[in-house]
Image (cartoon, rainbow, N blue to C red; front, side):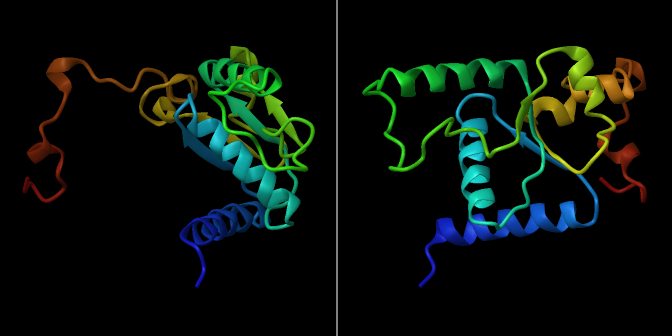
Length: 159
């Protein structure tokens, strides 16, 4: 029996690999605190196992980068509040080998048009109005009087 976590990792690896093989980039929305670190640990494992190609992996979220620093410091200090990593992890456990960070708005903006396939981990809210959406499309929020109702927004007029 395959463990559920392994099945999930295989599906994650397959989705990423298919997009990268087609020359695309992968945008992963992740909560800044904890989820970004979990995604980075999984990517490191998948790259090491050869399930995902080694491409640049960007973290594009100031809060996620701050949280990542907290996790790194806690690991270095061997904080009892942080679970120990598996033996042999060595180095930066959150670096799949090609980790890059986008700390500034210009660095983040450059990720709108990457020059090669890559993986971008950004704040989960980026898809609904975070800096990624605002940089690419401007303010997506219509004026209150112009906001359509669900019924009017439905193509067939049914709610």
